[in-house]
Structures are given as C-alpha cells and as structure tokens.
Amino acid sequence: MSRHNALAMLIALAALLAPSASQSAEEPTMTASESDPVKLGWMLGSPPPADKLIRFTDGDYFSFPKLRWTACHFRQLMPTVGVARGAQAPVPFARKIDDAIDALTFTPLGGGEAMTWAESLQANYTDGIVVLHDGVVVYERYAGCLDENGQHGAMSVTKSLTGLLGEVLVAEGVIDETQRVGAIVPELADSGFADATVKQVLEMTTGLRYSEDYADPDAEVWQYSAAGSTLPRPASYTGPRSYFEYLETVRKEGTHGKTFGYRTINTDALAWIIARKTGKSVAQLLEERIWRRMGAEQDAYYTVDSSGYPYAGGGFNAGLRDLARVGQLVLQGGVINGERLLPEAAIRRIRAGGDKAAFAQAGYTLLDGWSYRGMWWVSHDTHGAFMARGVHGQALYIDPAAHMVIARFGSHPVASGSANDPVTLPAFRAVAAYLMHSPK
Image (cartoon, rainbow, N blue to C red):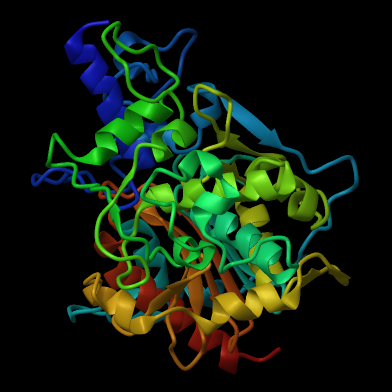
C-alpha cells in the first residue's frame, strides 16, 4: 500500500470516528436538495458507473456529498456486528400525525430571519426525523438515503448508548464509579487512564494527552484512527491494531476531574470496563438489556475494528423509529410497553447532569449552562431537556416537560454540531412548546 493511499484511508476513517471534526474552510455549497444521493445517482447501476462508485478504500468515501449515501450504508462498506431484535413481534407506536408542525416558526440562535420547521429540515440536511408526544408518533419524515425500512449511522449518539449502559451498571452495583480504571482493566494500569475513576470517564473529565485537531498531522487522533481501521496497514506499520490496544498507549496530561474534554477514547475505555465487568461487549449488552425487550422493529448493528470489537464511540446504526424507542424508554425512566428494562436511578443520574463549571471550560458557546453526565448532554433548561448528539446532525432529544422525544438522522456537510445547533435547538424547543399547548 502506498503512503498516499494509506493516509487517504486514515483520513476517511477519521472522518467517521471524529466527535467534532469539521469540513475544510471552503464549505460545500450544494443544498440538501442538490446533494440528494438518489438524485446524484450514487451506487446505482449493475454495476454503478465508475464515477458513481463509493468504496471504503477510497479516501473520500465519507466526504460531502458522498457521505449523504454512506451514512445509510456502512454495513455495505466495512465489517459489522449485529444487535438482534429477536423473534418476537415488534410493538408499533400509535400514530396521530400533526402536519401543522411543518408551519411552526422560530428564530435561529444568533438572530436572522424566522424559519419554519419544514425549512429547518432542509437547512440541516435531515435524512429522517420522528417526533413522539406521550409515546405517540405525531411527526415523521424521510429524505435522502433513508426510508422507514432503512438504517443510518448514529455517529456519537453511540456514546450516549454506551454511557446509558454504564450508568445502568453503576446503579445496579455491578460497577463502582469510584473505582480506578487501572484496577478494573489491568491492561490500562500503565496508561493515562490508570488513576481516573469510572465517574470521570463517564463525565469525560479525564486529563489525557489526546488531541482531535484534524489540522494537526501529529494529533493523536490519527494514531487512534489507524488502530481502529480494518484496512490493511502499510508494511512499516508497528502501532496498535485495535481500539483497546490504542487505549494502552494513552498518556496522562493534567488532572483528572477538573475539566470537561470531549474525547472519544473515554467511551472506548468505558466499553472495556463494561466488558470486563459483565463479560459482554456493548453490542451484546445493548441487545440483551434493551434491543430484544423494547419492541424494536429492526435489528441494529455496530461497525467493528480489526479484532471484531464494536466501536463504542461512534459505530452504532439503527432504524429511526427504534432510536426514538430508546428515547421513549429513557423519557419514561427505564420503562416501556409496561415493562421496566432499566433502573430508574440510572436515568435520574443522567438527567441530574454533571459539573457545569467543568463543562463551561470547554468553550461550547452555543451550549451555555449545559453539562455532561453519563455521556449525555444536559441542558438544565426549564424543561429539563437532555440529548444524545452525533456529528453531521444525529440527535436524540428528550424533553420531559413536554413529554416529547425527537430522533433525527442527518448528513450535514459540516460535522460539528455548531453548524446545525443554531437551527436545531430553537426548532426542537418550538415543537416542544407547541405540543405542550396542543389539544390531546
């Protein structure tokens, strides 16, 4: 493999793994309609024409506008492990579609012209969105690569699922959140994680030498991406060959517990802790505790590293309504379809949020007053809203006061949440306000 091709592959993989990556300074100018993957003809034909092929081995497989197809087709491009829904019949949602939601208006953060809900979907390159109110589907739309039968990458929403499992195990006493990571996973006893507590990993307040600055060719994220890749390495490659192996190389920098730092490696460390304490991977545990029991419509899956281990920080893929089911389960304190699946204490811990002062130091100006707990983002607003977030527009938004869940998949050309938050956050709040005052 040439040095150029190896670098291209790592860049491509890093785009998938990145928790806060952004596009280049010259942003794409194609609108959601213009970049529609069906309209552009990606992967259509038997075989597709050469200029319409998308391969994992191509360095641009996850660049815009190709990512608008790739987001729905990861299992066609790379190895995965399944999360089965089981043989039981799905439990369908009741439906009471309210088309008036399309006309709701709001003002984006920072000002500007008022926008309608329908316009916001195009502005944020939405591939699919569903709104639940009191557990009933009141709004559902699909576009681009996604339909109701398809699956979509959840990106870093995956972290919140891993965090949820972690909080469940803490609530059940399987994991002691005050225990040091090195005592649970001896392989990490010489790493930067060694003297961090489980709680600090869950809240991402670990002090670690790890940069996800993609403009820096020496940033640690490149080594992390190389470790997780399932592609052949150059003959000269001598680094770690899995996510877990990479974690052993992470060094400490600063003091644990002082400052929030959004680092994907924390989620993979939590996944290792979970596996060591339960004997199950996050994919197996999610299937056992949630997916087979919540009435899911579809199987889900994770992308994996070269050892076949699921990528706990960003590899989850699922159907849209099933993601909404997870949100409804959490909204209802761990109960769905009349059955308790998760301890209420775990949900209460997440909703309480984390250290707001530690979070403020990270500089998320659009999330002023928020915090991070159990790998969920907590708003601390008057509704008690909290959410799971992923690059390119993935979201699972829960508003307890409005009894509302919004699940969204997207393929925004810019990865960072700061590109869509000015529209997303006020749009979600506008729907919540409307539903709170709409007739039953």
